[in-house]
Length: 144
Image 1: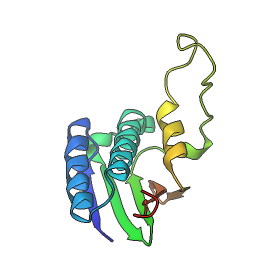
Image 2: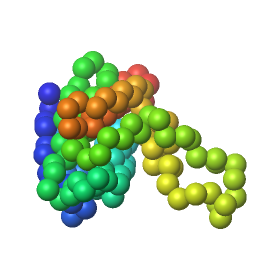
Image 3: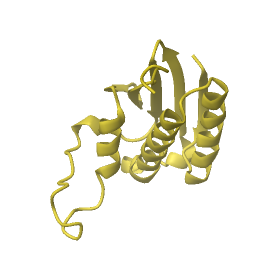
C-alpha cells in the first residue's frame, strides 16, 4: 500500500485529497499521465458521492470518503470508498456520444471516462459502503 486517505464528504476537501495523492504518487515516480488519470477519477467519484450519495436522508458531510492506493507490478489500484446511498457506477449506461450536445442529458460522461481509463473495474457494496476498485496500467519505460 502506498497510502490510505480519509476526508469528510465535502467538496472543499476533494482538492486536499487530490493534492495529497499527487504528492505521494510523485514521490513514488508514477508517470504524470497516470497521476492526471488518478486526479480525474478521484474528482469524479468524490463529486458524485457528495452530490448524489445523500439519498434517503444520508448527509455526506457527516460521512467519509476514503481512497486507498497500492501498486502491484505495473498496475496501480485505486480503492474508492464512500458511505453514501448504494450506487454501482458500472451499471450506469454509456452516454450517447453521437447525440447533439444540446440533446444529451446531463451526467454520465465522467463515469464513461473512468471506464475508458481503467484496465479493470470492480464494484461491491460492503456493509454501508460503496467500494469501487479501479486498476490503472503504469507505463513501463520501454512503452514510454
